[in-house]
Image (cartoon, rainbow, N blue to C red; front, top):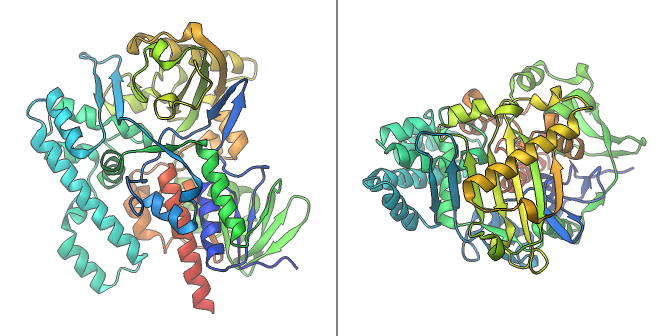
Amino acid sequence: MNKYDAIVVGAGNGGLTCAAWLAKEGKKVLLVERHNLPGGFATSFRRGRFEFEASLHELCGWGKNPGEGSVREIFEHLGVDKKLEMCDIPAAFRVITMNDEENMDVAMPFGVEAFISKMEEYVPGSRPSVEKFFELCRDIVKTTSYMGELDGKFDKDAIKNILGEHMNFVRLAGYTVNDVFNALNMPQKARDIMSAYWSYLGEPLNEMGFIHYASMVLSYIEGGAVIPKSRSHGMSSAILDSFESFGGEVWFNSHVEKLIMYDGAVKGIILDDGTRAYSDHVVCNCSPHSVFSTMIDKNDLPDAEIKRANARELGGRGFSMFLGLNKSPEELGINDHCWFIYSTSDTAKQYELMKRIETNDVQATVCLNMADADCSPEGTTVLYFTALYTENCWSSVSVKDYVKTKRFVADRMISNFEKYTGIKICDSIEEIEIATPMTYARYTNVPQGTIYGYRTAGWDGIVPRIMMEKMDEKIPGLRFTGGFGSMHMGYSATFASGMKTAQKTLADMNKKA
């Protein structure tokens, strides 16, 4: 009988990390993946003479030295860090707005002091409020690290410590990013610049919790960012290699059709060919929507799980365009790695515009050559563009109009990039590939093509998720990891989610031992 200590369904970042962590602890672990390769979103593909990065713009949490950075610590523990060559991202971002009364075009560096000084150049008098912003960010990160160590065990001593040593977290837990900007009296243009990263979380700043945004911004600006020379697929392959070296077993081309249920608890999996594997601990690196709607019979689902899944809102749906250009960055006049190009700096207005194909002009654009000069053949350039849709607007596109619509969006992206950066690329395109929300839904089996899991706003924000995590585990033997876990989408978050899920699973195993 195929009996395992743990079964992990899905070889995305969270599933890979969870499986490798458990295997390193000596557990017998089965990793099941429906594709023939690991990675999910974390992969690459070739068109002509170009290899395109499928999803990773930049990875934060790596730090400058061994032992620094949350992601590097995880990779060091799993023996993955030495298998990868990382390329430093040269600068934080360039942000451009297209339709504001006073259009913005600013470029910001990494490093907190350098960032604050550059902000003061753009917005004289902004230094005190921006310094205070980063002080608060450091306090928040300190507290979230402490809360992570508690693992949901908020006893009297923990609560006393939080109230005594971590009051900024307590005060700000219910505040949005805009609430904090207001409290700091931050000048409007400084707020607009500080808002640039918002699309990486997909929530407007009048709804996004400050705790969530603070952690991400500090990680990027203080620690910088990198990208693996071997693309994100190199990370996936390296973690898989470690997993197998620890004795883990992987089944590729294997689609889980059902979870085995007994007396209300998950006890294993059934593949679409009838193969069964058994375990008291099953971790799913896929959406609860998929699991609850197809893998578990309705009679076996607690009402609370159905209600919570139905109440949650999906995060941004992804659209990406990949360009291989037959000129070098120097020939094209490219000097930046990352551009955020928005219609407006007002994130609430921008969020509304992103609900419809016709009004969504957002793009986060990356030139990989600026971090890795050898990422494409000599004399060429790789650019990739990403947009988010905050409603399921692509579902209304007919089959007949699908190709025309995606080309319409791609053409508009290229036109806006050329207009607002001054860089001409249209006549240099050698290869082009376009991925719509339908592409992501088909390849990764995520509902509506979301690349951000569930929205993290209001009752389903990061703080409520962390506080309620233990109470939310309603089905014994089942956990979720990755982008649909408690920590949200994004590379750093999904690696951390995999680690945390493995640690919780180990704790459950130890209780039974």
